Image (cartoon, rainbow, N blue to C red; front, side):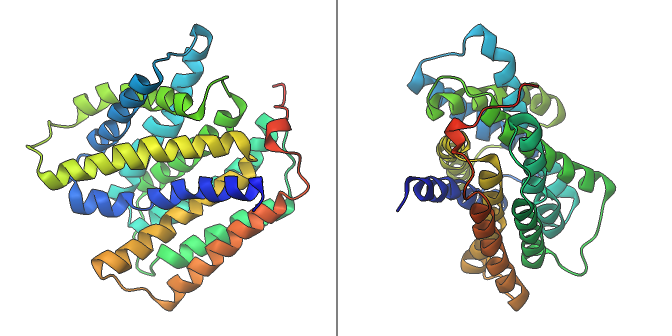
Length: 295
């Protein structure tokens, strides 16, 4: 197994685990606390990782770290929850799945990466696969929910590309600690202002928060930012198509939800689009050797 293949497979575990967020949120967490849940997913995990690395950013990096924390966590998670509350899950997932397509063009602008027709095709195929997987004919639309879903896609796209462009000379563990903490700090006043205090937490609530914070945030984002640093952005972004695949499979396996023929076809199409996106990067210079565009 080549080193690049190992990097792709390891990075893919992050969005695959993120697919468990929906079932954990709906089955284990208090309802109707989207901003508080996002806060408690980010800030405790970031502070824990800071205790491990015992290192703060240099002064010149503070503004960039807060921008990345906002894009990758604060804005992204807040908009995802707004979309989830105002749209059927299938509509929200389909709209946010345009993120890899945005990344192709943002990587060209910020990193000087070539816009490959095969990468664009892979992103479009992936969007179609997600639509088959989660979209239902009677899905209702809501203007604010649609705007939030697009905002989430744009936020993650910018976060993915800028995390590649702005690479501090630190480990992925330290980089993750800084961003999670910054994102959590930005969410703190918003959550306290807009949402009431949480009720007394049950054992199931604690398990849910522990999973989302320790595994769904701290561990997976260390793996994710490692992949962002080592792989082309256009190869990393399509891996997020695995999240709705995992969500559908977990719903079928744990909640007894149906798994239709179109959904099975959607899973196959998503996997094919990911393979196509990786194939599109053959012959590209290694990500570690790529030079960011001077803009």
